[in-house]
Every structure is written in structure tokens, then in C-alpha cells.
Length: 219
Ligand code: SAH
Image (tube, rainbow, N blue to C red; front, side, top):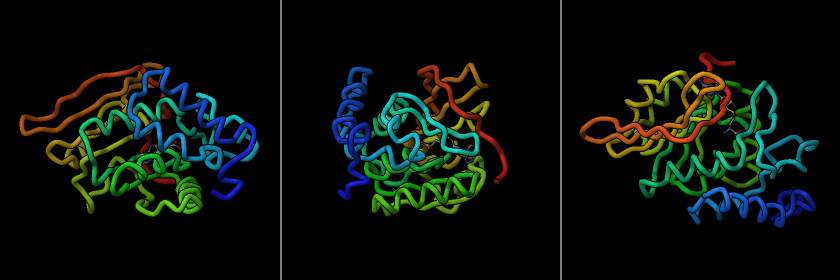
């Protein structure tokens, strides 16, 4: 790895190893998820001034009133999504700076990632280019529409919270498909996992979480 990707001091491999040990203590069990989080440099996804804090278990600002999700949430959502086994096509809503995208892209065949704020999408593209991650397609749009041209998806991961699970996204799931999505108003959100079967949609309510709101339209 080139030196700026590898990191030094607070952005070094030792710091990433410590973050992964914390994730294990917090209950993350998937070795696949832990391995990609150990090897992916999170500090390149935040402003240089915040790089030394990139491995703390906190969300950090990425501009435009948005935040990069904390490492535990990224790990937890990825683990929940992968429980059903190998995924070939995953729709991600809320590309942001692209960190969650980078983790997913190393674990599934292809990621289709939608972001409503154009400058964030550009940041994410640059970050993933730097890491040579190429199995990602990007769309600048309101993710409430999903991505009909490539639907259905066997996985959907949403990283902003709508009041309820959008019907359009449910329709873009394959039979057997999985969706992980936070829902609810600020202050009282919960992570939901939806599994689609012949019988319908099975919804499990999981952890209490805190996400930025799912907004409509594009900027
Ligand atoms: N996974 C990202 C999280 C960024 S925060 C990261 O780790 O960086 C959530 C993101 O969802 C923001 O970038 C926000 O602009 C985006 N977002 C919110 N509502 C959206 C919508 N309806 N469609 C697409 N993106 C949306």
C-alpha cells in the first residue's frame, strides 16, 4: 500500500487493529467483515484535519450536514446484510464519503450506490478510485426511487433514516433478498432487517440507532 493509504501514528495499521478489537468486543462476529475493516484505510474518507480521529467509534462530519457512520454501525449493518449468504447485487442508498460502499464492495459482487448530494458522490468516487475499488456504479438521485434499471437486488443497505420503509425499495428486492434500513424520527430510530419471501416481507426490529434523515430530491 502507498504510505498515505497505509497511514502512520493515529492512522496506522495498529490503530486499525485496535478498532477491530473493539468491534469484536462490541459483538461483531463475521470474520469477513472484520478483515475488510482491518485492511481498509478509514482515514482517507475524512478531512485531513480529522484523520487522527477516523478510527474512534464516533460518526464524523463529512460536509453538507452529513456524517460518516461510526465503525460499529458500518460493521453491524454489513454483518446483518450478509447473514443470508453471498450477495451478488447490492443497492446502497446514501453513498456519503463512500466508506460503507468500500467495505461492501469488497464483500459482494457489485454495489449500486445512490447519493442525492453531488459533491459527496464525487468525493466517494475519488476515495474508491484511490483504493482501486471498481465494482461500484454510482447514481446521483433521490434514493427513494431505488435504481429500477438494475433491480431487483439481493441486498439493500440504507444509511439515512426515512419515517417508514419506502415501498419502492421493497419492490426492488429479490425473493430471498435482505434489506437493512434505519427508520423513525430523530431521537427514536431503530434498525430494521427485512427479508422477502414468497409469503411476503418479514421485518425484524433491531438496535436503537441515530442516523441523518432520509431526504427527498437532489442537491
Ligand atoms: N454511508 C455513508 C453515510 C453518509 S450519511 C458514509 O459512511 O459516509 C447519509 C447519506 O445519505 C448522506 O450522504 C445523505 O446525503 C444521503 N441521503 C439522505 N437521503 C437520501 C436519499 N433520499 N437518497 C440518496 N441519498 C440520501
